[in-house]
Length: 174
Image: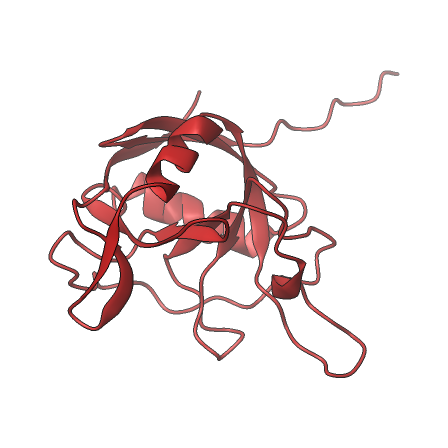
């Protein structure tokens, strides 16, 4: 009898106005988060959204606003899975949320450096952290080019690219 090989992690490709990058998703470590993200991908939700928050040497965030900075209608929030053992390290992808730890919907961010301050803490002061659910496996230079665009404050949002960086299409690699 031979042991079954573990299932491969899903990989999604993100086409932007500045180029393409791919993300490996960690289904075993963050199952609810990956399932949620993949539903948005399959629905075409991310197509036409922008990276609306760009902070060099910190994060690029997108996946919920149009180029006119209008929020898209999302599904209900998901449970926080930040205690999955994954850390907010350079190139990892995590869910954005409000101060409510269980408020993540569609927005995600890519860490541009090791951001351990975004990880959960069990010792005082305790905090939930931000759920890491994948990592960029190709095209990190595209993410870095997004991180280098000039930004402004617009419509109540800080760190908005002067020229929108649009997510044109996201799909699951077969």
